[in-house]
Image 1 (spheres, rainbow, N blue to C red):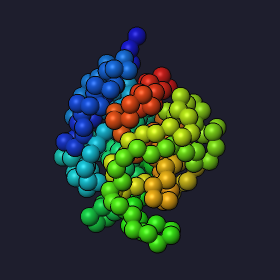
Image 2 (cartoon, rainbow, N blue to C red):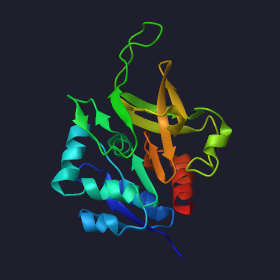
Image 3 (cartoon, one colour):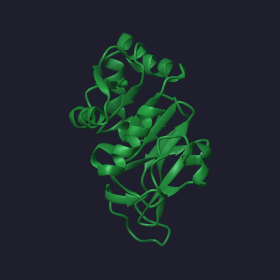
Image 4 (cartoon, helix red, strand yellow):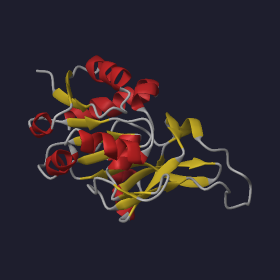
Length: 214
């Protein structure tokens, strides 16, 4: 039996490519844009491309902010992709300070424009980079990275990055211009990836397949 996935449409998601990826992995996909649809979901995917404030505004205009928060507390699995992962945090600092969903305590802040060696960093971070253990291999077991190896490459496009209040929630990192950034966060039923699995080839498919089977 295929897994039913509800894909949140709040006006900024790359819905078509994410939907195709989910369906390729065997999911039945339902695009949702109303709070009652969010609450009825079996599993929820929050995609996104764009600015933090616009993302929260899109959710608020459709009345879905409280619904996503309540869903996150239900024990059902929730996956945030790129901007969708950032919206899970409490505060975003893009173009001012804005409240997020606060599903996970943390901030979304700009990628530093200068690395620890004092060299200028190209922003945004665009391209393929290798996933690394944030702590150890054990943190990847049983989550969305269970079928991925340290050093596998995935595709990033972002100018801001997530800084969880609890560093233990970050399970994978990436080094960009010698700056360590959070690539994957997980906390019980909450999962987030800063990269785009739908643009990451076989590795992205393994990650989505793992999410569907959790």
